[in-house]
Image (tube, rainbow, N blue to C red; front, side, top):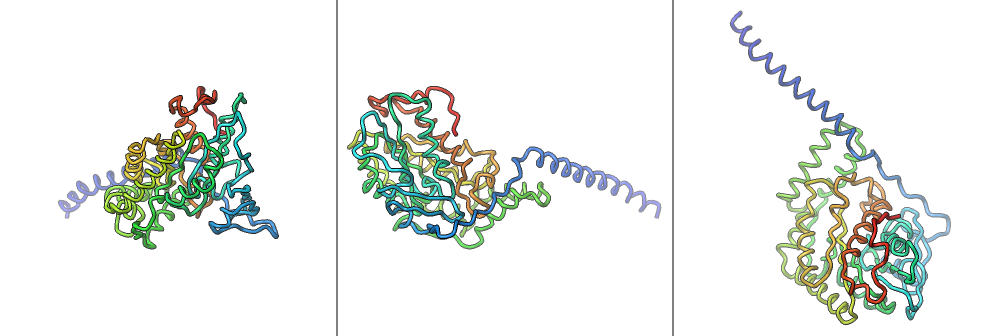
Length: 364
């Protein structure tokens, strides 16, 4: 018995010490993660619309002329006489005006955010501060639910009539969708949103959530399972030549439009607000889009580095809508201004680059 007890003591004491050390290390890590994590913030639910004000949900409603209503969540929405979000602009273009046509989908439109908070509106304010002899107008042609082909149709049908001097395409990864696109996402992919909400809430052991989210995003990065959104994007960007060829042709059409009018094109890649850390699983798709954009002579601007390290849900419109909120649009505007600052002088024509771009940019 004595020898058995001694053996237990020799084996048990190190085991207890190791277990205690691991528990202490996890406790310390829990404290460190909570102290260094972005502020805890679950986005508030949307407000109820005022009585009698129509709630706009359909693409056709957003794209119609002279619309007045609210988006789901109670955010006011208006369109001008051509169906662009915001105020009316003079046609033909007055002298002394430099126009940027911003094209894109729901992110560009500003789904869930006020008109003045969209990155198009923020860019316009920044370019006109301080005022100069040139007035810079930034037209928001973004509409929810469009792919690259429909975005180009909208530019041709409405945007070109405003005689733009530069085109900024706010590109979202699902813009590749079209006739050849293969949809394959199944319900279990909702885990991405569940993990993001859990990480933002921090109402349980944060160290557990921390490792779960990173292991999940690492799996998505390396071995995305069939049925996940990353798998679907991989399939279409890397294993579906007709889908990529369609996107290439649409970029080619945009290149033709720009060349015919002597315009530069900036392609601003929107960041998906999931897992904004080192294992962000969308990097390779951004790289594929950058390759296409550069081949067509566009200035590519990947916004991912502007978002990494941010608390993902803190930038969502609400806890169930991963569109960027006002703070997210401020980051997109900052990236866009950096891209505009890098453009060659020929892109600005006789107007010249705005003075704002020659000094540090604070976006408001």
